[in-house]
View 1 (cartoon, rainbow, N blue to C red):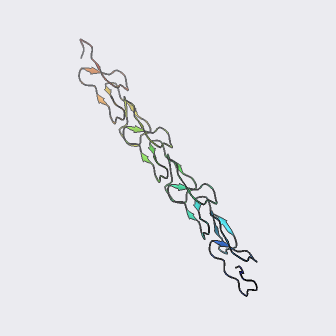
View 2: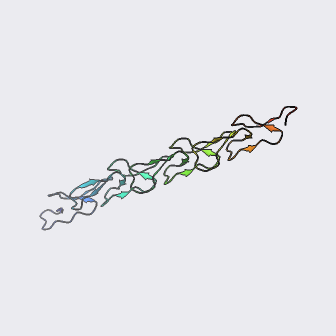
View 3: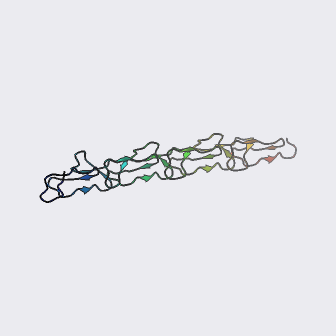
Length: 186
């Protein structure tokens, strides 16, 4: 309670989101990043993963896709690309695993790299194309597979290899084209 009037005969209850100490003539608003204690005698810091604006009675959890690493936050930050936060109240973001990515800040999940693409390490904001001579048949690949001898892949982002046509061959893996059989052979 605080006593606003001189010679007053009563004290007023401190409002939520404010604090009043014994003998105060006016209430004091709790700053952003804090909230008023149940007795309204102090302002307490919001925990990591939470935030508040000035004059708050309680703190709010950071929404999914955002976080606050330290206590006393007035706002939450968006998880950077390559990371995500799937639940509210996060004090940190998780790194997307290899084979997945998140392209934009504030992601609540990661997406699998599509077939023909890959991400070799965690924390990727995009996926790389499989080079010619290699492929990835499934989504969520952390690497590409090499076309076997007798097969080839002429373009990047392949999801499979093609067999060399009749009259042509490839002796080594990762071929980008097949060679004609020499004269006298087939």
